[in-house]
Image (cartoon, rainbow, N blue to C red; front, side, top):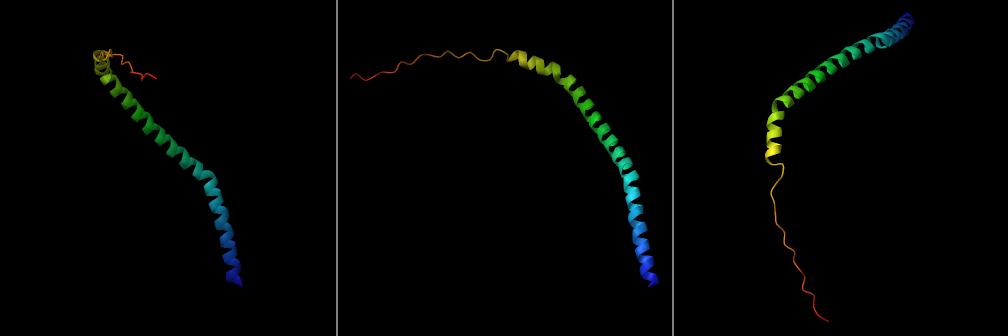
Amino acid sequence: MNTLINLILFVIIFYYGIKVLVRYLFPFFLKKYLENFQKKNFQKTKEENLNKKKYSRKEKEFKEKFKKGEYIDFEEVKDKKPKK
């Protein structure tokens, strides 16, 4: 009987201990995880913007070169309608 009471008491203490840890530690770890995630993404976007600036001149030159495109002269084709 004594071991049953000890087991129930241990389960209750364990349950409330986990509940308190999750309530206070989980948000802390989640906050740290999200801060690291934001830093990594900020660095990636910063690097992408720097790379974009490097190649923007080449892209502009390429776009200006092919800006007008190729001229195609279309001819009208008249359909021959059968006479009734």
